[in-house]
Length: 119
Image (cartoon, rainbow, N blue to C red; front, side, top):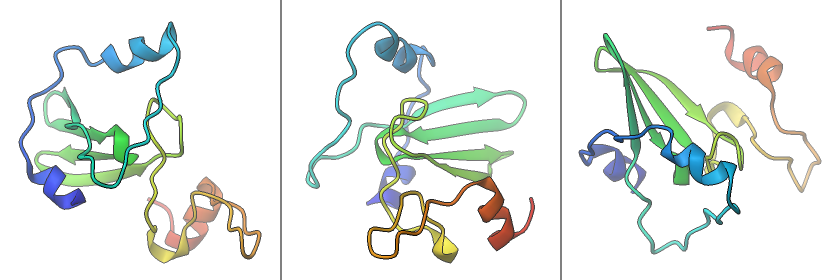
């Protein structure tokens, strides 16, 4: 379902800051959805000459394309920059949340670099 959502075309947001404005002054709305609901279309931001961000805020992920090639994937914790938390397994045993079974803490920048190496 995630890849299907990425494949669907979407027009760029006419007001990239519209999602920020809804959270500044008013009460926050829950971003949780049932398993049968489709996520809203992604927010797309273009940064000339060749950078495009496709943000799936309800899924907790943002994709960055440079010259049409996927360059970077960002996953988010709950309530960071208007994103819902990413709820799926991460590669290489990386964790976004504490482990209830072992008590292991979520990974931070240092532990990500230790496991995957520097950029």
